[in-house]
Length: 145
Image 1: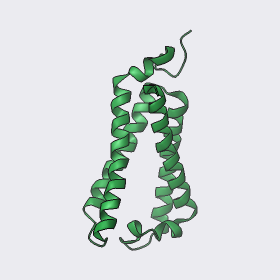
Image 2: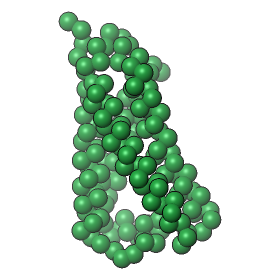
Image 3: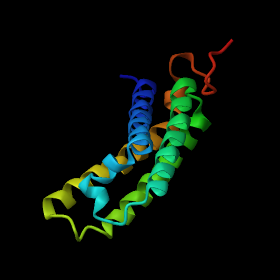
């Protein structure tokens, strides 16, 4: 797999995850709330959850645009935006693990750590720029004329 294909696949994975998460929270906030890693920090707030679902979908739009265009600045911007969100999410939950069992807390931290590691690796690939020079790419999302 080329660097460009790997970058596109990683972006697609992040975008797909945000679409699923955003739709789940926006359309079924009560069901999302029942997830043990979420409900251990009460109280339930439908407004906040639906806003978070909408924000997740907004991030998915930007990630999908990056997948579609593979324009370097958009790719980097979308990945950095995702990384900022996932680092903040990891840091918050790392300080609030007390209600969870050791196994659940460890699994949760692995999941949240992966949500930081993948976009960090993708930022590194995108910052290098080689993925945008492959197969005649100009890095602008357009083919050379």
